[in-house]
Amino acid sequence: MSFITKSSEKEVVEAAKEKEDEWASGPASYFPSTFEELVEDAVGACQRGMIDGLKKMEVEFPLTSDTSGYKSSSDSFIDGHIQLAIQACKLLSEKDGRRYRVVVPDPTEQKRASAKFATQIEMAGGNVTMGSLSGKKEEFSVFTLFDNKVDTSVPEEDVADVFMVVNASTIELPNVKQYWEDYVGDEKTMILWCLELDTLRADLGLFGFPSKDVHYGFLSGFKPMLYLRQRQYSKSVPIAPFVINYDGALFRLYPAPWQVMLKQDSGELACVAERPKRYALQELKEELLEVVGLNTEEKGSNMEFLRRGYKTSTWWEGAEGEKAEERSDWRW
Image: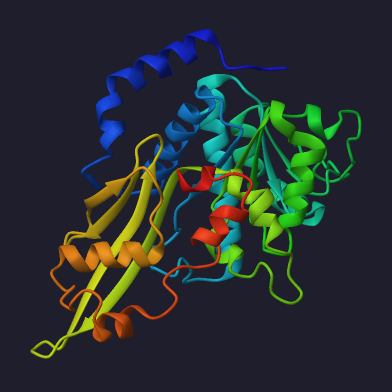
């Protein structure tokens, strides 16, 4: 079994000490120009998390500048997430020598992705493999491209030290939980890679979907390493131009605190507020309104109530959700 080497751990610890002040307050601005930069930032954050002993981690960033996160076909995003996950595992393995496994929802997707990204997997070296949530291994190499033999010689729990889950849907979240229980456990590490968990959580508890217990008992334990969620807002005003648009983002780069970022005309995200605990989306909006000078309603007035509405948080963000969840790692 491979473990993080003493030399690489020492380098990370020394680098962490050098940047301790920066991480304690978070970056003043953030403007990654390529996906490679995002992946490198995510890799650095995950490595710091593993040095700190974290076993459940989350990485979240959009594949487009569109605030919805989606602009193209679903296949493009599925492949994009897998490609970036393989690259992240390669970089992490080069740094710490651990074995990484990119886990997709089912064996069919595993087979398709293994063939499509064969070159990238081979270039990543023997420490990066692909698997599925079913636990059935169809190991890929250039020698098994055409025979598709299933390798059952090594138990799933022994094939890797870190398991990175990609492209799981709401329906498949219980499978992620079962995979954790069967193959990962507290001795190894799981990283949820760009699953858009807030979107998936919204379906929990609805008819035909898993219960909210999936969040309360499982997802609540995953600490965000790199988190970037863009938001776009507008507000009507009684004078020209009558509608003012403003963009921002909720951002976190572990171990720095959560930050509210305001998007500048240049596209750069500038920090306008930060705190250790995660902001609810309504709190994010209020912070942005305040900094752009649009929070003009009198506090406690009917106009403020009409603008904010009765419900100011989702079921997983609110106080009731916090009481029900087994852990609150996802908030800090």
